[in-house]
Image 1 (cartoon, one colour):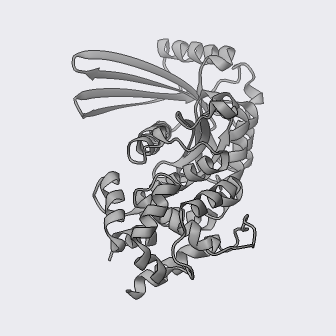
Image 2 (cartoon, helix red, strand yellow; image 1 turned 135 degrees about the vertical axis):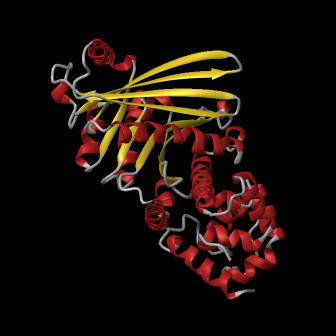
Length: 384
């Protein structure tokens, strides 16, 4: 076995060495670190549940025994299931913090992005419910570093309406200093805005009917400015073509007037924004208008980057989880198991995004299953 594989997996096991083993010490045949690392490798290689992890491990036993501490061979399905059911999601996710920090630093250096956009949004795994046991579908809130292609954290909540309490917990898990935090209207809350500012970050928060008075006041202010000279405002128009559509987006950003309802209660509020999207697809035209409040000073290019970055969590993260990892079809229904697996998918997606190859995510994932060398490239963050 090449030395590169041993060195690479030696580095991979480090984040999990402090993870507390939830199993009884009786008849404990397989080291916890090895079980967890195999689970991550198998998810990268295409596994979507404990049975698939065990099958992949059995087929790759010679390789795995050569690079991991497996005195009794590879574990069976029940071992993976029991471990992923017992590991507390918060503690499990925390083990990835240093690894993610390293990936984030590397991505920041490669992209030369000084103020990254961290998009916060929720997603449901629709088939993960268990009505017989009163378990609703898993809904989790994630934070996605759009320019880096990294999932930095997730917090599960009972349903979409609970995002308001999940978002503050999520923001505490991640180093947000110097970033732009973007959140949909559900998370447009004064306490969340204050938390972002106190974390030395900026925010762009969407407005909808949940803040009807403020929403209408922002609409009225922008309409009034549009009829005047737009003092202090900046505008940017972009056009995108592809996949049979043409979309023209107009970004408008202007200073937030102190006369807005509750102005002083929104910590750090400096600007308001409007994004108008005209889309022409197959002869049909649609228009969408979005309003927001922000702590950013007026700089429409930066504002536009933040808005586009927020859309990235849907296009680059959620879409990939459903299409490449088939998350929406997952029938894992034990609470910790489905949460831990959701995080494994997000971290695996992040690793695949970091690989410099030009293949699609789906092809990269298949290649991880076909080639041990390619799998090690993805895990090690390099190419041979």
